[in-house]
Length: 141
Image 1 (tube, rainbow, N blue to C red):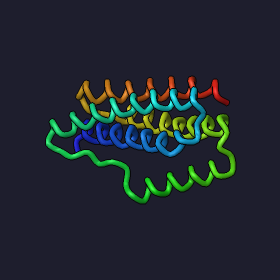
Image 2: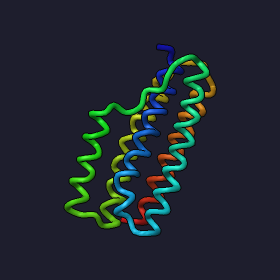
Image 3: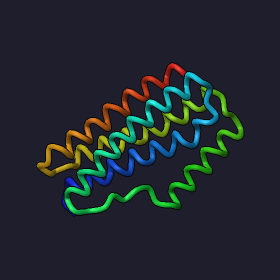
Image 4: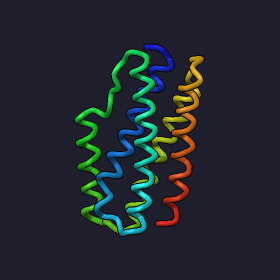
């Protein structure tokens, strides 16, 4: 697979997982936090849709999060929320998940050897958004 396709697929999958994570916790959030989560989900959707377009332009199909990973993450989140669905716990879960994503995004950007400026730009946009989201979630701890 070409380096830019690997990066676009990673971006697509990461943004898709971000949307799913928000979907899992949103119903437990109080109004102000729910609004923040919806804003984050919209940003993830925008990046996911842009990655989708680049992947399809290059003749491939986006590969989202696998069913097993999706179900496992959802059940783990629901289990944690069953014990504590406070605003602080939801923010903590979002920070932890996003921080893992930041580390992986940095690794992918550092490993990227391709010349496609669109791939690098979108990866950096994802990273910037992830970092801002962590900062915004700190207010809810």
